[in-house]
Length: 296
Image (cartoon, rainbow, N blue to C red; front, side):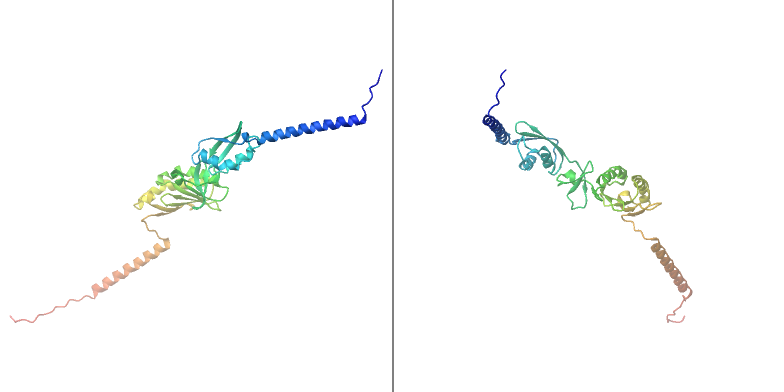
């Protein structure tokens, strides 16, 4: 039996070199083909289809705004980065992006639904129906009628929920809520559209609602006692333990000390007037004057 002779060393080296060269060429061709395929202009993003109920934006302006910022083509585009670019546009709350072969994107858009302004009058921020604060320009008549929430950062959802609970409670006051404010000490304040200010005080939501309910129930009778209606309300302070302080348009109120001082002054004046009248009555005399004339 003949044993096969091993190939000479130079032959083995040549075979190895040939194999390596073949593999390198194959990898190079594959890489070049992939590079050409991925960079082919035919796969550049050329179509963006926008879906969703859009009120404050329109698909054309959205595409024009976002398309220049998208990096890559159909195959290399980072969908998460594209999602963030769409969500950075004002009024866009959420975006879902998917590829559509061969060169398109389909984008599902959800807009913010504005419920209130947030912060000071000059602030461009709003609160959506999830209690999230976002920055956008209010451009519709309906948006300009939104209430304003002013409070500490991170409390927007709590304040929106409080607004929703107090809104039906103030209907008997014949003026809707224009502003809800919460200070750093946890004290709540309302301002109605007619300018009336109601200090609700601090405490749990139940406590605040109880104080407002008592006020709304009793203030029409109090106003009627002064010949006024509830729409004459200027301010109310509900932070009292067993009542509230009230100011009505056209009704002048003074402190207890001032009222007592005025009553004392009025009594003293009346006493002086009475004394002067009596003195005049006692010191009065009758004088008869004769007119010269002929004797009868």
